[in-house]
Length: 149
Image 1 (cartoon, rainbow, N blue to C red):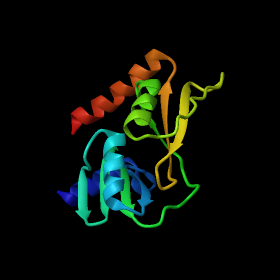
Image 2: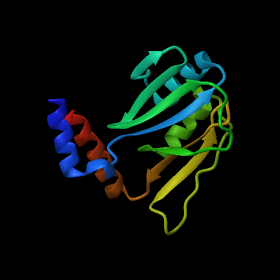
Image 3: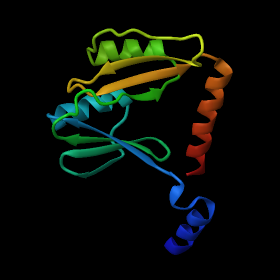
């Protein structure tokens, strides 16, 4: 079965096809980091293979990894699409005590966005489609992919 899956994978895209993605953030205090990211993402990690490491599958095939270690200050941001940016900003300010941050727009950009930092300096952002139809279309794609699993 594994060989058959590999052959199908090779036939539809070969080695050039990207089918999964990971992004890793490092934190000095893993216990606090787990709590912070569980609160940020509203869920427990999907996978904890060993001490000092956790992963959340944010959408199908896209993983956020949290590892104990020295943060890479100034890297990022990773931006996550949310249905209501203002509501998420208020939740983060209340629950995680994040310093209030601005929401940005530009006439030629179809989303509004905001960027903030975790307590270790990792840059994270949220974005929201401005056009409601586009937002619904993107959300439906994600739901459709989840239902296929």
